[in-house]
Image 1 (cartoon, one colour):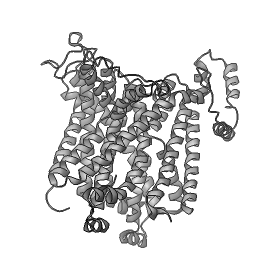
Image 2: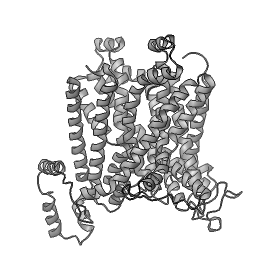
Image 3: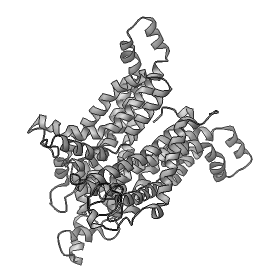
Length: 314
Length: 273
């Protein structure tokens, strides 16, 4: 229980800090942000600047502004898009599914393949294998996902010119088509985490295979397969789960870039468009929402930790 | 580790030195002006005149690649050095003073660390406007908490050691203990992590430039070239192919160097991510 309480406290502190920082981002824009915001649709006059200032509360003390903004955020009011005048929360809701799907699919591909691959890699031992696997995993880790995506498009348009690679189909309209379109970007996105996680699984497996309980399992005459997957892998899973949690943040960021390559209308398109239009409330809200979800995912992963490893339950 | 230097270390270190030399010597070794246009060579593939071909404006790809390498490496290196100075110092200070100092410093770092890397960088650039300078600042902001966290752990161990106690006993100042006594003992950790994070920073810089937030055209950077090459991908894939390969080689060499250094300098760190 103590563990849970201290984790929850950490979570609260981090979420508070993230909200303060995201709030300050708009306040720190050099020049008069209000004039910029106003300049988006109308002529800038002192009256209009003053009117907008008081409408979005900029004439109030900063502390008060923060709390009224936070109050809005907590009740689901993230502000209004400067251009479309639609609530920012609607804009985000309309763009978040492609990004979430892409991230989850990449996590499934990367984490899913890394377990058998890592176990396989743990069987390949010796100096030559160590070097080859090291070079291979460093290469996997440093191939830029967005470049890999472009190369895949290049290769496939040459090999299969009829295949419609780009774009997005909502899951509700065409579930198969949806996955088919997202699979390629997900693979491009997943390669670095596949390299990272499979190497982690390998070293954890090598570690676990030297432990007494594996020797005992061998002595009992269990099959090698059962020893690998049932006994050694379970321990290797502990660092794996933490890393997979951290990977989610990497994937979310990577997804924003890869989306651009495959013309997927996700949060990446939303936030880049918002920056180009200086639509600051939209930029701010998108960063806040994505970061909050990322922090919460990692919180849940931390709790999963307790389920896998009873030793943490203190 | 006593004994001979691992072969892989020599390979990785030579590759990094070579790439740094290319970046430093770019103005002298690039065959053409990276902005000069040769309309007749537009979108052509590799030839004797243009070894790697030319882009949609007829600019020599090899020259742009060499200058792009210089821009990408320069921005990333500047960012990582700033992050190292600020983040590293914060990590050391937190580990040395403990108590409230540590709690406050590390909580602030936790908050910065909570943002997905690309997203925080995008946020910083949204404030400052696109360009190479803002990109360097954005990457520095993103990596500051990472350096603070990476150094705090090992620094805690060093802070407990006898020689730090002794230095304190003879009345050395806090700053002297931190920078003269503790810092040199963390050199190996620093070297490894700087190399690994520089590799990651190259990829972040390339992503940001690819998104149009980093180095602004017509100046070349590897990410900008990739994004320009993508627009003419099916007409002439050379720009997209070569710029991506250059990003990969740069990030790969730095990452491999850090990876091998980690095992060579500090076997205790082996296998940690």
